[in-house]
Image 1 (cartoon, rainbow, N blue to C red):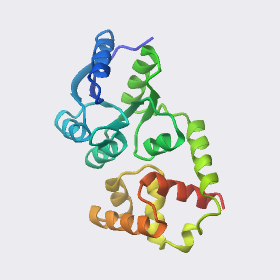
Image 2 (cartoon, one colour):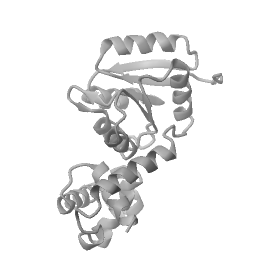
Image 3 (cartoon, rainbow, N blue to C red):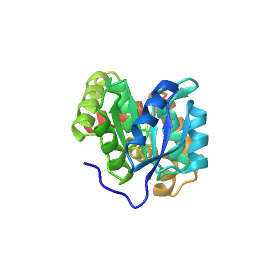
Length: 219
């Protein structure tokens, strides 16, 4: 049972399939607690419309024609750290789940979920809660640690103390702006640290950096 809101939750839909967006629009017409304020079908459109509309929740697909929802989520949260992104996707592999966790998303839901579960998830995210179960995070991180164990030296042998501090915050899902604030650095300096970390660890994504961090904790 949904709870009445003083104001409807302002929702931005991001999916490259028009039929999916149409289905979601039809669904949310029956959910008075939710108001669709805009739509986007590309990564660029998602970032642009999020900035223009400042929605309460962004319902985001993973695969988009010009990029992916994870990168869109990261860009949106860089500009607006309070943004709440809920992924609605057909992909449930561990790598995808991990990438959404460390992009700073508020939750992850499969498209096979029923309509009531989707509405409840949006309401939960709007209230600041995460709908990704901790057990899922543990399972995914454990899988990555197992895959990467024994292949590379510990991060402590590669990274400076400041780079390790940056990596710790990346692993917690913090955006560059949040890391800059926490460590009293400029955004540019944080980007430089991340570039160096990625080069040293021979990785290209934040999710991989997070996996490195958790592997180090397990030693």
